[in-house]
Length: 415
Image (cartoon, rainbow, N blue to C red; front, side, top):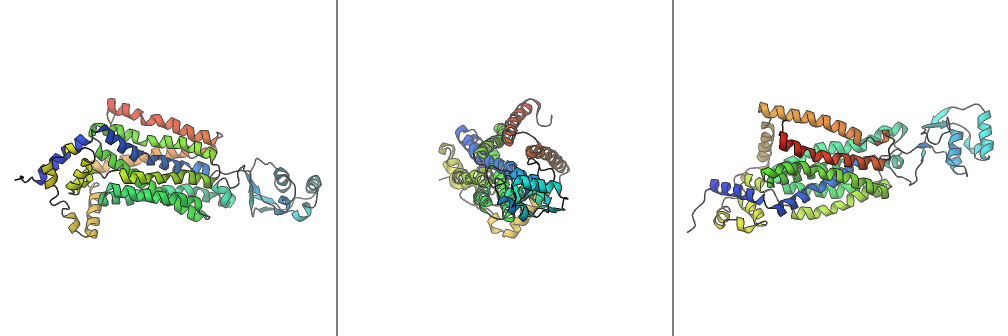
């Protein structure tokens, strides 16, 4: 007759088995690959702002002169102050362009140079100096001059989405499982990415970017948590530092893709449609056994381990762990479970030492993120080729994930 095993003994054996599973190199590295590859898409969507929102040189569109055989430079020289095609303009002279269109360019130039200058009026429509029409959201929706401030909303929306997604998917991961959170955020990624490229409205575009930010935050948090809860302690430092290597790889890949897909819509599709590969990750990435154990679902935790190495599972423990698996959590209402989760979240601020560490981390991350994105997304204020600019950002960032490994190994975390 099989001896009854206490829950404490089951938990202890399961913890020891998880440590052995965490040493199964092939399995842990497969999880690492599935957990880190979504970072490629995170990086691409964040940095795509450099290409999607590029502001081309622009000037006022004058339909009467566009209908003639005049060049852009000739139209600019007659209609604007200075007449330099390398400069952007938001206003033009209020000439009688119907009359000027009937003249040859030299005659019109002589007429305007000898006549008193009329008043300047704001542009009603714009022309852009682009090799590919509608190459950016700026030329798509005329986000210049008085509408120039709207351009940054494309990036603000994704940043707000990442902030909101951290709370939403953090709660989902804690209450319903890390894998379920990962799957939901992947599905949101698959839908919102192409939607941003398909829309004809700038408002809908910013909303889609908002959901891209939510999805990116959910994918990152869920995948990172699964990885760290599966890996043994000695490998968590390595995985924690190298997990973000997908970001610089994503930047470099984005620069190459953007070089060949120069229309903003085609670029958006090019970085969004491959998210369909995340469906493979959704199928194969495991639930965190430690989360299952914390929820009292020992049988489910054993099943995850069974998929890695059956020989690690004692038959008697597996049999006994099926008893009382669901625990008391399922008997509670969703509201009580929600309040319990909120209480656990707020409890971390009750500890003075823990609270001070969290605040220090927040301040550190705020300063690091502010300087990081100010440089990474500010290509317009540099004269460099934007493709090289983004690629070099990735190349220079890559060593920053290797250096901490050495520092943590020899100096420790605080030093």
